[in-house]
Image 1: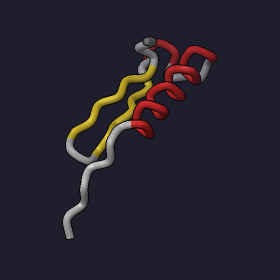
Image 2 (image 1 turned 90 degrees about the horizontal axis):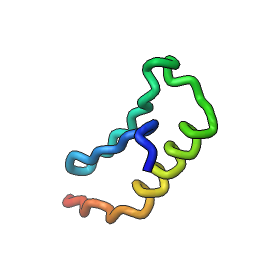
Image 3 (image 1 turned 30 degrees about the vertical axis):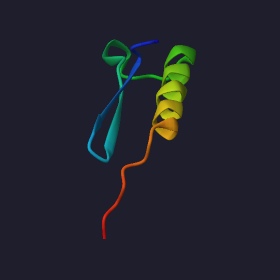
Length: 52
């Protein structure tokens, strides 16, 4: 797993952080792949139940 994009979940909120500060988060194939992986993980994660 690449650390070019990081993901963390806090309750119902998921934050994805681009992590290439030395390149000002410029997109390259590694970052695109890492971002796609983090988004796929978020999409596959169980959804929090909303109460009304």
